[in-house]
Length: 156
Figure 1 (cartoon, rainbow, N blue to C red):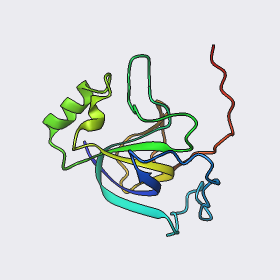
Figure 2: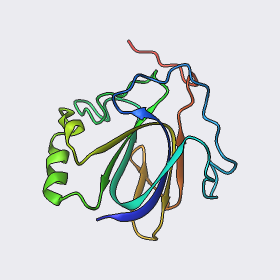
Figure 3: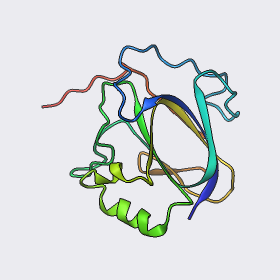
């Protein structure tokens, strides 16, 4: 099922562009993390459509053996935002879902991928589902941005 939404993106480059490491944190409009709509600002692009899925990932794997965003890394200062619009045929959506484990969905022409430093998802309906990190949250605007260097990760 598709839901109408606005999606302002602070896009850095196409998905195959070099990382944005070393860039200063994004300058965000007043109210970015609140309930007010994002004001038009330099560098922001807004997509408005009926979306089947909007998935933002900063890591390459969403679970063990699931390469949801193969080009994502923790240290590049970016998120990959993957979008499926309502115009995508259901057969293509099914094919995409069956290729996520290998990361092959990333090469499907129906999947739009944006490399961003920040985004805001603004639902334009009272029906739909928004989940953040797998948890369903109230249907309202959700904002995300990358804060480079704000987390220390230790792996053994």
